[in-house]
Amino acid sequence: MRLEGKRAIVTGGASGFGAGIVGKFLAEGAKVMIADLNGDAAAAMAAEVGAQAQACDVSKDTDVATLVAATQKAFGGIDILVNNAGTTHLPAAMEEISEEDFDRVLAVNAKSVYLTARHIVPLMKKAGSGAILNVASTAAVSPRPRLSWYNASKGWMVTATKGMAVELAPHGVRVNALNPVAGETPLLKSFMGEDTPDVRAKFLSTIPLGRFSTPEDMGNAACYLCSDEASMVTGVCMEVDGGRCI
Picture 1 (cartoon, rainbow, N blue to C red):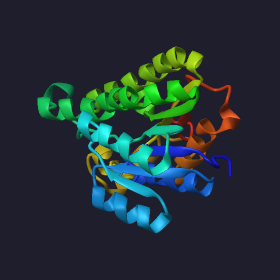
Picture 2 (picture 1 turned 135 degrees about the vertical axis):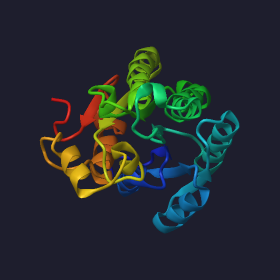
Picture 3 (picture 1 turned 120 degrees about the vertical axis):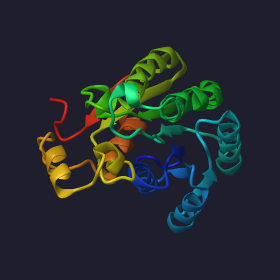
């Protein structure tokens, strides 16, 4: 029960890595608000696991404001924020990515961190405590070709994490990030371009431990960084990647 009494928001929490983080947080005693663009999936998962749910497009200020208000109403406060929602463009030469895809990737992966900070950081400052976790990617550390603007968006998250950490430390708020390698999530096919045995084998050959990240891997790492066990840890961008970035 390392998160007993903690109140958390997990964006993109209805599937993939987000669902793994939600499950671990609940098992460790936290109250969790599942925020997801797919409101029906969030509601169904919340009903199944004993959480709260809120439909939310994290790239829209009004949606984030509604999410924060709903969480405060349900829990009375916010101790943990996990910025997990993310998206990518399909693999292609950088000059061939459409402006629409570029704008969508930066809005979901970067602007969302700004928007959640805008609404939640003041609450954590007032409380004098809090933990924020940004889910970045190994793409920020070891970029893959043909995922140029996705790589850049995750590099932005890493720099944002460090900047947030140093600014918020005097207020008792810690900010860290996770850099997962690709896993069995809805985005896996988009990263690979196509999902075939040969493409999977080629992808896995770049991971020394020989497997994808799992939602459980992410949940375990997130639990540590958001718990009081990590009270001296801030500004860290932890690879959960089976050695991919070595």
